[in-house]
Length: 116
Image (cartoon, rainbow, N blue to C red; front, side, top):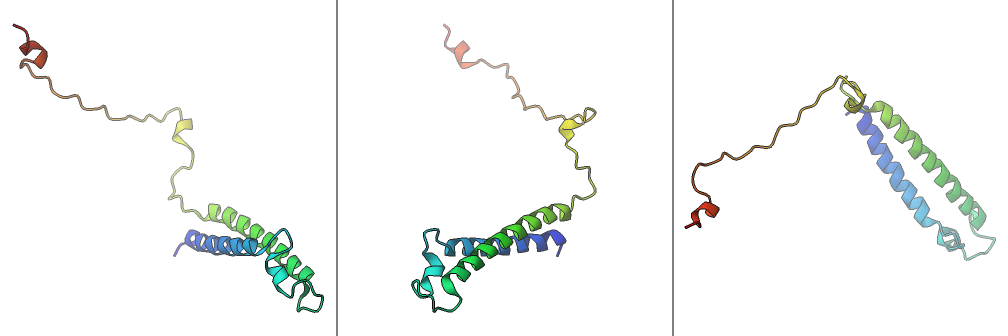
């Protein structure tokens, strides 16, 4: 298993967790934070602490996702080839095959056969 594959799997997991954490939040005061007792101050953790946890976890997961994406770019196996574009190389010539032209027949064409 290559390093890039490991980074790719971690990126997918972190992205999924980030989606879940963002979907749990509700900007109007609802979401997970309101389901812990409906605004009372005697619930476990408290609404303020739940909101702080969701906010910190969102920023942490977003930062981790960015770092993993940048590190995966370093881990890509380029196969020892030059990574420069061939469009920038003035000495590189690329040829494309010409389209095949159908062979011409010496037989009469439909336009010639209608003449009388």
